[in-house]
Length: 504
Image 1 (cartoon, rainbow, N blue to C red):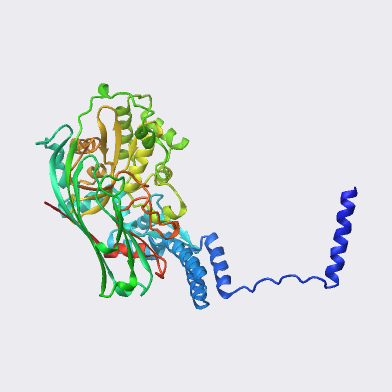
Image 2 (image 1 turned 90 degrees about the horizontal axis):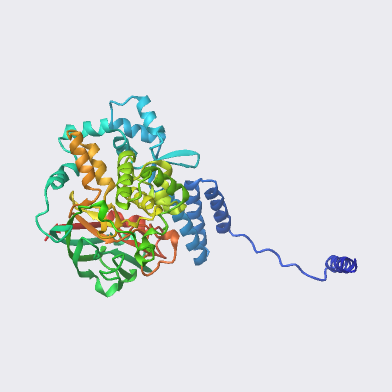
């Protein structure tokens, strides 16, 4: 009671003092136009009006810049980048996408087009009260409808990937020790050529350039040059988990019409062909560092209870690791349609690729491979996801596949996406399709360029800002950070990046 009475007296005294004007309250700081716009943008972002948020953040950036508030301008720019990255892969609303489908597939009825657009396998985004469709919606229609796909391939008398690789599937290896043979020497040139006019006059452009590493079938890696050499600050080396050259380029030193960065290298890639006897697979050393590393949950290869349940449903009562993997492989290749994943959106929303596939039942090479690896890891089978390029078709294209580890055999390749190409063939027999799929459960062609041993290897040095790095999952093109750039340079770079890989 005494304590309460004391507090009441104190309150009365303070009230009297304030009423008499004996103290002066600090007035709130005036809210600037930039602050108002930034607050409105955050509100639009929270209710998923991403396009509106992008514009409001940009207006806030402009106001902060005019007021000389550099720190606030950068924050507004980064938030605008975040909103833009989430919508970047979605550029057509329903009416526009319907018109595009009608132009590409004129024989399709309005009802068929509506069915495709409403399909759960069609990737879309709700923003600003509208549904926006992924840029690869039309290719997805073909990937999800084998009659359409096979008819198109029949009209061209050609099935990509399958026609190039089916001869390899049937051919024995000519040379090599153990599972590695038929080596192919490759020479690579990577070039970044950005128009100077797209870059600010001042500031520092930080670049992470992908490079090859030594990894299983990829050997004799030589980095010939990275130019301009004077801007190279560090290189990870060829024995790293992720091959990188890191450059810092003062933009005021760029005087020509283009900013040019070039990397040259060479390596030898071996064909892999494993012949595995399940009885010879030894128990895992579950305390080894490599076992612990590649069975642990990762950022995108997750081992949740739901993932483990899915894996157990696939393997049933099997306990042999190799036979368990084969059941997982057949289930994934038999039930998982190919579809480009919205990687920038997944990155910004922190949605693991493997979870995305588990929940949607679709995915591209990267998402499918991470799903396959997650299923393996959830059952205590080490698995990882190499990242790089395939040179099966020219020009070389980005690609991701998987590997699983068996004691006594080592790392075994599995390409669930290339295996799916058997279904696209218009003239293959069922036996040919099965043989092709089975080949990529434990063998792989020598037309690969490996940049990283597994996904989610961190950039070195760490960029330190998750909102302005395009993706930290796979590094197949340069990533970039530039504090003075008005937009995200990582979204611009793909249009000015080329990779040329030729047989040496």
